Length: 76
Ligand SMILES: [Zn+2]
Image (cartoon, rainbow, N blue to C red; front, side, top):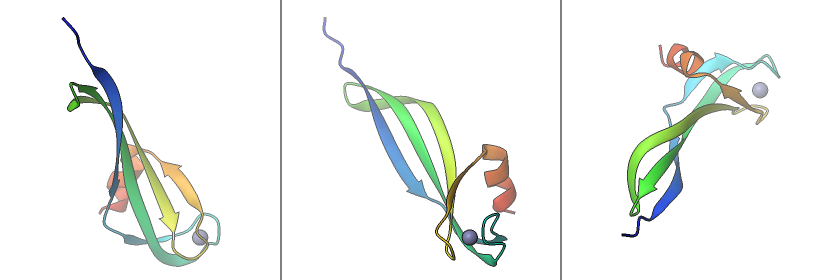
């Protein structure tokens, strides 16, 4: 019997939010996004192996990694 395993990466943009940038100190829109890596079996996603969140400043363009907890705080 043959099993076809693989990993697929999925990118999802999240709703933007105004926040103070840690680099340029300006209160501007920030664009959070989520990147999830999933294990696939016969090209069908089975479960998520890793998930990371990033936020991009619209003023200076700096991109930083945030934790899931920080992402939840940004959505409030
Ligand atoms: Zn900035």
